[in-house]
Every structure is written in structure tokens, then in C-alpha cells.
Image (cartoon, rainbow, N blue to C red; front, side):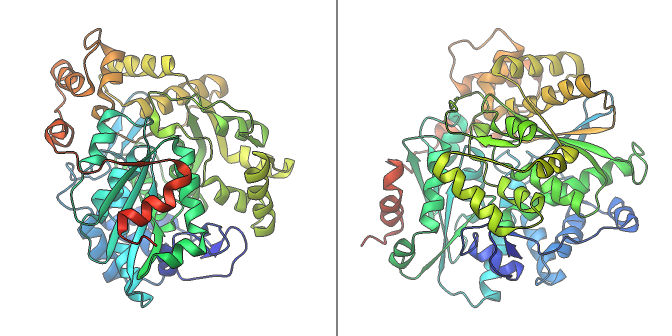
Length: 494
């Protein structure tokens, strides 16, 4: 593994343990593995767990197959409500939904964050690390709860989550603040997700802060950590293998993936699958009104200097600073760490940067982009329910609507997979409003009950029980006080 800003190589286990490189860059594979057609045929005959072991083994080269198998078996066990783990549903002509919300917190983050704690503790042993691992997380809604559940009472770890106080859904907030365990800490930030994410990044680069955490080592569960990113590569291979197994595609046929995108990690995992040999056509980046990524992919200029920030019904995408984009910039630049560091410095100082025309052309060869507003999101939920009897959450609806617009614009009729990132019940009020006149003035949980009655879809126990659980985490802070908040939470005040 090497850093996007030029630091030398480390083993995958060390990259997972550190989370972020010493130079502030993100770890990326020094070279990508290559999956041949015979590998794809092997995947067809496997279940999801076997596919995960097969794919992860090509990236996590200092882990043994037995270690990866043990981690996978533990991660994808009884806490998933679907034996397929990541099933593929047909939702229209040449269109499929890759359902990634069947884990314990009903969001795609479970696919990685049920596995990461196992990889993290193994990485600590491999690197002789005996200190407590303090996980710092910034969340726009789903990562926080998934990390808390993943690291809940895992020996030798503690997990500290920051979320924007007014920037998550009622269900997302309750999922976090009701979390038990002796090693979990949840802190509301009086700001937006970018404030929380920037604050966490500052903590990682603050040597005095690291020194103050006596007996602890810092790491991350955000997708800046390669250990969060690599499990996400698996489900793109799995989706392709499922299409092959059903006879929907022929070997080597290209498939498009449309991904609702905020921090750019989920779609980057698809990019890494493509770089490793998966036959991917276009990667379609779907945004909400905070459409900085759409503008960047279309113009080559990333500019947040005067851009308004919108709070929407797709809160997990209410992001202006997409951290994982740095990994794409690294590859587009010919893996020029010094150039990437200059771009990141320009973003920090000026709020903008522009890539070269050559880089833009290379990006647009693989990527398309689009965005949809809140009215469009609700219209898409309603359309898919009426036409396909398929109920999707607000974020998935963004991808579905953007794919529809992309096809109309380009005439691209290739098989396409919409990445479905969350259960509709995590955003019950917005989903119910889209398909019904009922529920006006009701709270999220009453709306979820009405949604279950109207659609016949089971009301997940994880959401149904939330209002009955005690609130365990009440801390809050300003963005500039996050350092003090962590110290207080973990008992490391100085």
C-alpha cells in the first residue's frame, strides 16, 4: 500500500491499523490484482461469503486465507436478515437493484463495518500493537451506527462517533444515541458533516493530540481507511457474478453501476473493481442538490468556495468535501503524489482546484454524473412503487432517477445496477410522503408503521424498537472543540 501524497509503502494490515498515512494521504494499492475470466466463473459457483474471501485475498496480501475466512464468517453471520447478504433485485428492463441494507443497521455501511473490526484486531496483532485502538468516525448518518455496532465491546478498541446535530434523520440519530456498550461514544457536532469530517482529519494530523491519548493508537472507520473500502469492492464482483449465474449477461459483457454518492467511497470501490478486471461500462455518480461531484466530473473543477450547503431528505449525501476523490485524483494524475498534495492544499486554502484536461478526459471516459432535487427524489420513489412495486429509500431513488436521465441523454441501454444503500424505513416519513397522502404531521416512527401497513413490507425490528430505548449519549460540541470532546469521552483529559 502507498499513500496518495507520496509516502512509502506499507503492508495492508499496517494501512488498516493506521487508517490514514503519516503525510495525510490515503492508502491505495501499490498495484491492482487482475481477475481473469476463469476467476469470474469461479465466483459464479460461490455464495457471498466465499466470494468475499476470494476477492479480499487478492487485496489483503499479508493476511492468510484462514484469517480472511474467519473474519468473513464472523462478519456475515446471523445479523444479516438475508442469506444472500447482498441480493440483486430486478427493478425494470435491464435494471437491477443491488440491495446492501440487509445488515444490522439497515445500511450499506454494514457490508464493510461488520468486517473492519475483525480486520483491525488482526492487523494489531500482526504489527505488534498492544495499545487500545481508538476509532474516530465522522458520519453523515449511516457510518456512525454501523461503526458503533461493528466495534461494540470488541476487546482492545473504543469507538468515538461525531455526527452533525441537525443533519441526520430521526431514525439515524436514535440508532446512534441509544447504542450500548462500554467502549462507544457518540458526540453531536454543532455544524454539518463537512465540519465533523474536517475536524476528525485535523485530529489525525495533530501530534500533541495523539501524544495526549496515552496508551491508545488512533485509527479510522471512515472510508478513508482502506479496510473500510476493500470489503465494498466485493459486492460489485458479486453482483456481476449473480447476473452471470442468472444468464442475464454473457461473460465479458460490460455492466453499468449507478451509485448514490456523497463521500465518493462506494463508487470508488466500483472503480477499483473495474481496475482489477471486472467488466464495468460507465460508473454513474448520482448526487442530490449538493452536486459538487456532478460539476467536477463535467468540468474538471472542484469548487466549494462559494457553494451553498443544502440539508435534504437524502442526508447521507449532504456532503461538499468528498474525501475519497483524492484516491481517484491519484490514479488520474499518473500516481503523482506531489501533484495530489498540491490539489489538496489548494482545496484547503482556496476551496477549489482544477485538474488538467488530460485528467478530465480520462475521468469522463469512465464516469458520468447527474443530480436530482428533493421533488425528483420523491417522484422517483412514487414511480418505482407504482410501476415496479419496488420500494426504495431516498438515496437509492437519487441513483434510480439519475440513471433514468443518463439513459435518456446517452441512449446507453446496457444492463445497469442501481446501488441500493439503505432500507426505506430509515427515512420512513419521506418515503411515505412520496407514495401516499397519509402521515402528514406524524413523526418518523408513526410514518414507518403506516408505511408497513400500506406496502405490506415488514417493519424492521431495528427501527421499530428505537423510540423505546434509553438515550445513552447526550454529548455535543462545537467543531473547534472536538479534540476536548474526544479526550473527555475516552478519559484522556490533560
